[in-house]
Image (cartoon, rainbow, N blue to C red; front, side):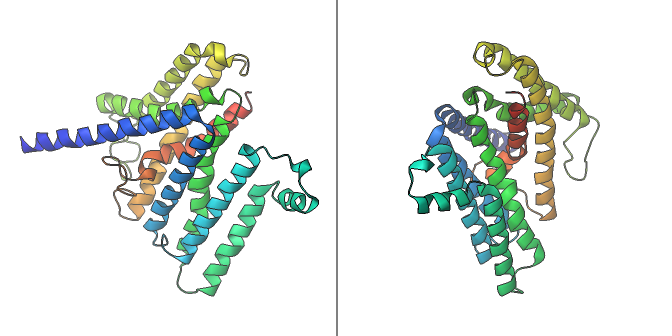
Length: 296
């Protein structure tokens, strides 16, 4: 009896967290603009903190470099994609500075690497090579990948296409869970994720594709002016996104297994940390962007 009560309480906690997460996701995606930018920036910084905490650099100089350059990266996105500054109207000196950051991504990466290696050398042997590598990796794994949600939302029909990210991640997760629970027999990675099955994986792919097709049918009139065959593109994107999101989910589990931790954090009751809930979204966002980029 006590066990059933505990299971019920656990389910309700997880359910309430899911409802709140969905409400925040829907509100931010619908509003877009600065609201979505602020939400993605906050999620990225929390996700970085969780990842850096796993390797013990979240409160160190190396971790600070990661936070600073993730912030710089988002400021560059804000300047170039949101502020709509008329560069030609600026004084000559400012134009030179801003033109230096026209290709802000390679500039930020180069400066980030130099600063990080400087900390590594000047504080040696405080940090090991794994920690420094994880700081650099985390920038791409969390901040850069999540920023693609902003890129998708700012595309033509972005208010509709941005949901493909969540269809391919959360929709896929739900379908994979349901199919795996009913039909799952063939384990695909028993040492890493004992509950993952081939049947569940296939169910997630087919389910995400079907959700994508249904979604495209519902909003076909809104999409046809931008995407030539939205039903095909959304179905294909849902399927590919599901494959990538499930790989991303297991990759995040592998990191946790290597570090002997259950969750990245405790921020979201019943789910763990930000990275525990967004591990599949992290991987799928760039894939959705580029599939749509070549379809629009």
